[in-house]
Amino acid sequence: HVRGGSIQTMETTSYLRGEINMIQRRTLIGAIGAVALSSASYFPMTACAAMPRGEGSDPIRIVVPYPPGGPLDVSARTIAEAVVDTLGNVIVDNRPGAGGGVGMGYVKRRPGDGRTLVVGAVATHAINPHLYKRLPYDAKKDFKAVTLIAHVPNVLVVTPEFSQKTGVKTVQNLVEYAKKNPGKLNYASGGNGSAGHMAGEWLKQIKDIDMVHVPFAGAAAAQLSVLAGQTDLIFDNLASATANIRAGKLLPLAVTTNVRAKALPDVPTMQEAGVPDFDISTWYGLFVPASTPDDVVAHLNKAITGALRSAPVQERLEKLGGVASPTTPEEFQELVTSESEKYARLVKLSGARVD
Image (cartoon, rainbow, N blue to C red):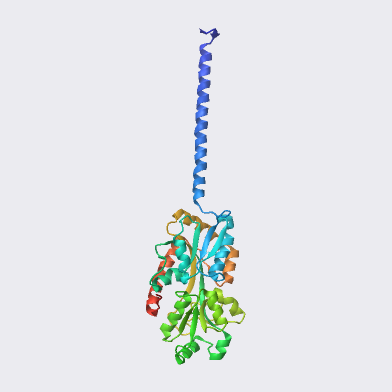
């Protein structure tokens, strides 16, 4: 064919059309691949952006609703150090007051973005709802469980000076002294609604003795009052009492669990010491505001339980008298529910009430 001074054969035309079609197909395939690659990159980035990570001046915050220095505070700081690689910068924020109510009330109002967690315990989630007429939070509705951190036995302790002055060397001696001196004994606790408070009220109920409860703003202050001779005894958690027991500054009379503590194998349980049906321990774990999405809870759970399974964290908690106890969110929630039911009965039987 002759067109505009150029000559094209049928073969040439067919060849050019094939080349054009091939280029178009390659262009289309390349475009589709680019879109697919872009999409594959975009969605994971979006999912990761929803996961909390402490960066720069915007760290993840673990609120401890008790003063610094106690086992919950030390455990929170241990975890904060252990999750830097997975969660980034994490700080501990102490907000004590009202038996843990101040800190819990603060966290329930925070956004459910996984950037604010709180260390809740047997007191805040199992005892206080039945002990207080009014609380600044609802333990069932305002939070989601992330993971249990640890179980810690409680231990009934006095000072050697108190023991020498009163002749109290066993739980039975203590009961006998209280019956002979009604209202003369007092016991310290880390606050109204704490496990130590409940243990004291439970002993009073079972043995029909009269002791005065002296609440403090945290377990550390309560123990100091016993060491200073301002109060007579305390149902302290083992994490707080261990160092002073080993130093000979505190005399352990019994542990409050139904089995002996590994750290104090020679110290009897309350049941062995003649107080039947006595089984009270301290447990604590991490919660987030109830509005936190389940995938964010799962992300936090994976990072924190991984830390709790590490040897350094387990060793640190063991030195505090605790046993690292990582769980799924569902397992921790089941524990909270069963313990709440248990303490509902104990609070009612003890007659303890905080207005």
